Length: 187
Image (tube, rainbow, N blue to C red; front, side, top):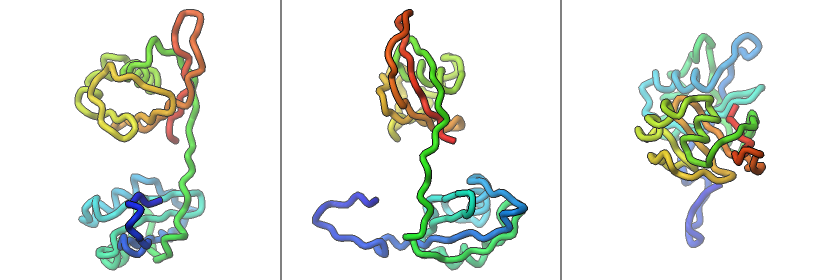
């Protein structure tokens, strides 16, 4: 999906991106997102020069800027303990990421940001408050630094070092006037 003004016509080639399929002995080694990210950073490549890392059961793919594609192809030979080979493939062949959430139902005294995060990540509010005030919490991809920010159904929450979550549903109130929430945590 591309967001461009209606008067501007673009083609996928305009973005100067190259997609690599990472071939490795998947029968013996499992690659994780952090392994691929670490290997790319060890090449001395700036984070702005490569994009999404796609992982699935069968394959691993990475998007890089075309200007550094040759460099990455020649120099990325190992990821973690695995010897790898990169194959250029068409951008249309990228893996469609699955939106998988581990669901949990919790009760919260209010819909304040600090209360919902404390319930989601099983932390005390005294541990959550500094995270929010330091700007380590995002709601719908925007940094929020106020603990009393009100959360709504469908909001995405991201806490640095803890992961991403989503308010899947507000299922009503309990007898003790608490909110019953169905939350999802990114796998």
